Amino acid sequence: MNTITYRIKDFLKENHPFSFLTSDEQFLIAKNITIRYYEVNELIFEIEKPVNTHFYLVKEGAVGLYAQNNQLTEQCDEGDLFGLRAIIRKDNYKLTAKALEECILYTIPFEMYDEILSINTEVTQFIISNFASNLIAYEKHSDSQKTIISEEELTAKYSKNPVTCVKETTIKEAALLMTERKVGSIIIQENNFPIGIITDKDFRTKIATGKVEISSVVNEIMSSPVICVSEKITVAEAQIVMLKNKITHLCITKSGKNKEEIKGVLSEYDIILIRENNPSVLIKQIKRSHSTEELKKIRIQASELLKRYLFQELDIDFICKIISEINQVITARIIEMAIEKLNQKPPVLFSWISLGSQGRKEQLLLTDQDNAIIFEDSKNNDENRWYFLRLAEIVTQNLHEIGFEYCPANMMASNKEWCLSTNEWKEKYHSWISKPIPENILFCTIFFDIETIFGDGKLEKEVQNSIEKYLQVYPIFTNFLALNSTQNPPPLGFFRQFLLEESGEQKEQFDIKSRAMMPLVDAARLLSIHLQINEKNTLARFRALIMKEPQNEEVYSMCFEAFKTLLKYRTKYGLLKNNSGRFIDLNALNKSEKLQLKVCFKAVKEIQSVVVNRFKLANFM
Image (tube, rainbow, N blue to C red):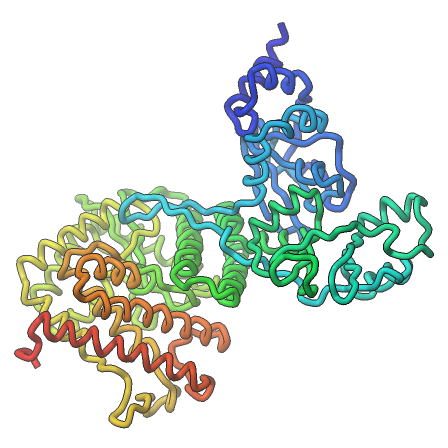
């Protein structure tokens, strides 16, 4: 009995898609597997090289798949398949595979795919969906539920200037045209309807082999009919169509019919470029980074991802979740690197927390830092604080280096005022809530929205519980918080003109953050505290308020949509001006955009009316 074969079979049955097979089928594949060992950085296969006669299953270690610019697009770990896509497509490799660490790989002859895997429906469905889906699963600190964010909803970005020719064009003329335009395909059209397509592969397999003369016309080697898809096709759908049809290019028409005008072309390489800026790939890269230089490059990629998402008109709530998650993973990695640099483990448990917009997961642009540290109480609080201040100094400096500016008000963990033990934080919150003077109210509007980025979230939860207790002991505080939330009235003057800054660098500009967004943020926080809603994100708070008080659904829904609009405006303007997007030149907006802003201001007015009536603020004014 060959014990190695049985060991391989045991491994196969524990991993998809082989787990879908019968025991005999698993054994047959195991018998035909070859075991190979690769050292770190050893090449397994190379981009644009002919495919091997086998594909790969990772037994131990990790393999990186790289695009043309040496950009890591995917990491394959134990149990992952790779190298199969090119074999199914019968074309050159579109990625380079290299060992990221010492690897043991099982190589499986392609005959096993043809004879066993391809005829099993569950196997083929798994392989296609595995190739097509790009998911991120991340854990929310607040409730430990996993949220799945999928790119299956992203519309594929295709080339809108496809190279075309007519069927009478010679192959040589088509080749010259493709070379001149630097593309890998040409669509043959008739009355601007697609009737065929030629790709680089056709030149290799039909012309270079001498099967067809280069002087022949294109309809002798073109693939026909052309596989056409809708201009609204998603990335996942495009990959599935390519895999099912074993092709690398899709013709884009309005609704996906052949008898329609050609709108563009989508190639597998376009998909690879999209995957380079895929959030799941970026997060993997962050976790493997070892320097601020690497993290800065990834943060720039995240900004490009943000631009693409905005261009594709994705929901701003979805975008916030993605970008916030990337920012949090970057911060967590910087903290890990700082601990390594200190060469000393933290003396006690601690929680690195983000404040304000970061704590609410609403930070899309590279704004300034707002962070703090909660560390576990012990007899050595002062000594422990010294460690965490050194840690924070490294972290805040590294965050600054990758683009997050220092907080002008020094509200950072490197400031000893914001690097406190659990009990010290409780005392701080007690002082603020028991004495609702303007300065303390201001601190609360910042420090009520906190989120653990790294460390033990139980410490943050303990502090949050104390806040809830103090609010019950000092109920008058909520009225002062309510009064504060109405201090910024709707930003329109008597003649319904925008209220602009009157002096300083931002003179004649509109402060979208202070005058429009913060009143909504403050109202959502206040009402959530009042109704004991535990959400931290402004949009999530308004959603919860709608459920909690359906009688006010119209107002809360108006605020929900207004905040989304304002967040999108600020983000787009910030990207355009390469700044925080806080101050907007109204001359840059068209009439429709100005009208949209005025609708948002109506939401501010309505929610402030709810607050005034709810907390009877007429007695305080």
